[in-house]
Length: 381
Image (cartoon, rainbow, N blue to C red; front, side, top):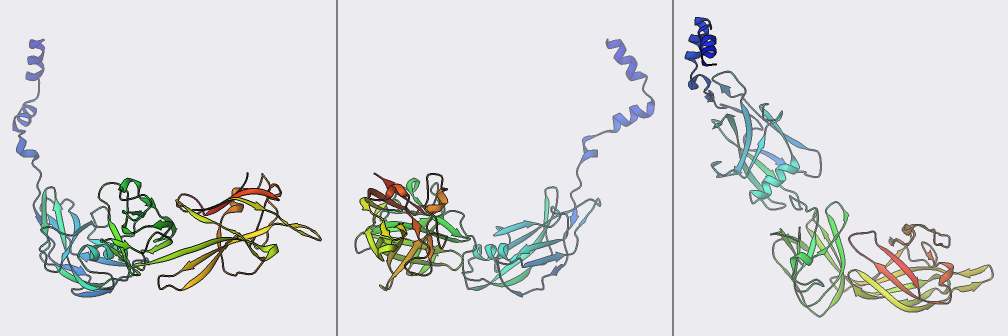
């Protein structure tokens, strides 16, 4: 075998032997030499931008190309820092368009609003961001020869709106154990609410129930990042609504909940808060009203409320339909879902009890919980 290998090697052309002998590690060394970006194109230095993160508006960043000594591709990042920063620890870096190949970057107002927030510019505040371009070839990263200032005005609201919001603290039903924090319901984009009780003590809102979450608190009607809110005056039931789009929060005290029986134009009984977003009336006799055409069974709910300034009011909860047929065991569960009613007339948007309810003792429960549509049920005992 050794003789065969020697024969194959000696049979190679002389030129091939010379090529093999000339191959050295240095011949494959990567040339990372580049000439950095010399000029930034857009936006102009000290350009002012009023941010509108809720829209599709964007700012285009452009610059001259950097040059690689070997003529190959150069990759780009746009770096942002505070006005007096030197980019040694930039607050944000974004790869340019085309996966880093193009010498431009389109950045949305939403992303710029996040950068401004990280730079310490408050909501409704105006401040300056410093930006430049980093050109890279392999491990060689070169900043542009110049940097520029972008002045921005932030709108009201948080730069980053949480996906989930939880309520925690000693004043809450679940206590201060973060893992047991109460989940708020997402009503619309950036708006969350919860029906719950608070006792004396402190509470706060968090964006997750594990680890080290971002915290929020209410200062009157202002929603802000960090801090805690103090509940006093004894245990009360509230609907808490947070609007992260406008940094506002409302604490509506629920002072009563009643079942309105339309045929008699009065309330049959009250439901009391029993925890976990649930209002309950137990062992109540429900009797339909006899009319000339049959027995009437229409009902809805009225919630008595008090605003933060002590003003009393009422809100009605009922069906999504102005009129309904009597439900049966085959009726879909959506029939019992609860909706706010704009008017408070005697008849419209009422539910109807099932036939089996008439003259029976029943439990009535209303559920205002985050994991399902607001709904209620009538349980024949």
